[in-house]
Image 1 (tube, rainbow, N blue to C red):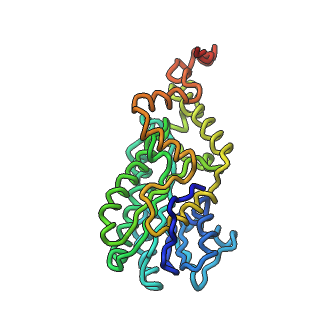
Image 2: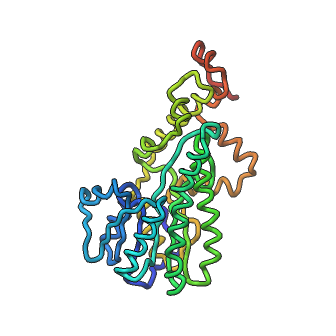
Image 3: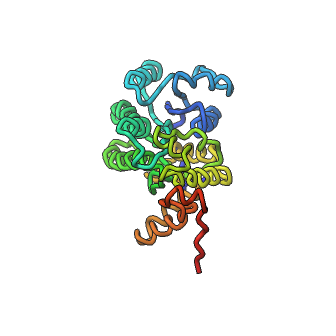
Length: 315
């Protein structure tokens, strides 16, 4: 967990907090932490995932409201906000945690797939945020916490549209930070890096991306196969967990004056420092050199299948 410097707890004792994607991963761990406190909770997930709450021992109650919410569906966004307004008046804190990750090189993404990625990670969360802003602005208090990613500050091959969605979320959140500050509403971006989980198994490949991964003769096969190995390795070796990130989100909620950018893990903090202080040319050359088996990328797949390329030797 990355501790917030100069932390001061918020003076409000009871808040109404809405969490999206609350049935799994960071959202589920945050839900468990919030249940230990006094706050009123609105825990949401897609209708097909609502049964997970009961399996985890989380049930509706006097201060817990469980609602179906697919952030890409306008009717569900509005219904969720109206249900909270009818019960508790409005939402004090929103944690935009729900999202999906598509894997593909740029050539393997259709317009429909590109929009689906943006819809889940940017368009939907921002529209949900727009719906809760009038209440926060009127009461001159609120917290908007958008769960971004290290992919929102630096892009990786085969993840261009995922990074695009997170870059968009970060840009809009930064603008919102300026817009809402005069009304006492604070905006924060929590940026997790790699966390120990099986999340890499839930990544969605585009149709063309999946075909390239399955076909060793595809020109992009090495891109997918080698990046899969890298991501799986990083997510299984890191000591950070979803619980660590959830604790950072909770600290951000409780902080009296939370910062705009909050590192969710140490690697996210390090990437931020590298991007800030290294010359851009050097930064990108270093990351390129660190890509797995980069000497194989772009080579003729037929030649590779006959005689695999040997690693370059650096002196």
